[in-house]
Length: 201
Image 1 (tube, helix red, strand yellow):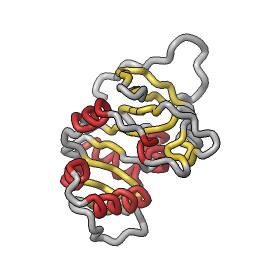
Image 2 (image 1 turned 90 degrees about the horizontal axis):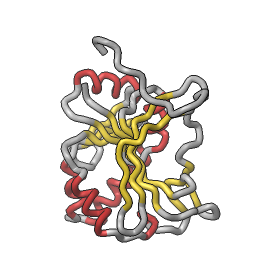
Image 3 (image 1 turned 90 degrees about the vertical axis):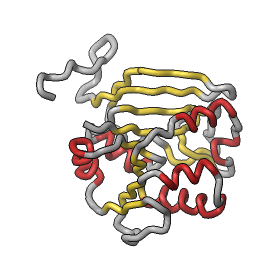
Image 4 (image 1 turned 45 degrees about the vertical axis):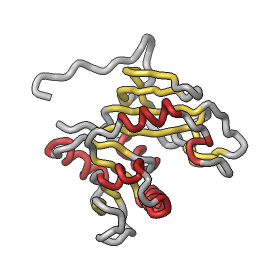
């Protein structure tokens, strides 16, 4: 069975971007960028139409930038009802099906693990459906209360997060890698852990 990772960068107060701030909040961290390069094992990139338009536009602007060339070579799936069937960015497939149905089918029979890129509404939908195996955040050391845009966690269900990896990069960004478990009710005490898998699951 293939896995799905939600992969997000956020400010400390939970925003995905901030008005007037540059990408990555203006932080240039060689250690973080080297780690990003290490994370490019084969996977299918999932995104929504807004993120696709933004990233494909960046790709056109930067030309032969190695990071974007690597992304261009990866298989990319865009969930959209508005994009044409033949988008301009290489190795991109437009999917008009419900993301939940498509990802569920890929988890059963796909050939690559999946990872999101931006696309907060897609991430929220897939997490709410219980399809996310790993939930990875890189938290940047800024509070953007005055300028923050795109609150990441609004509209989420209640979720318990089991920390499986953490790391602090050289400019103070914090990697937090979790296994998520949806909660029907608040925990009654102690740390919430995943239930043991049932035979045959």
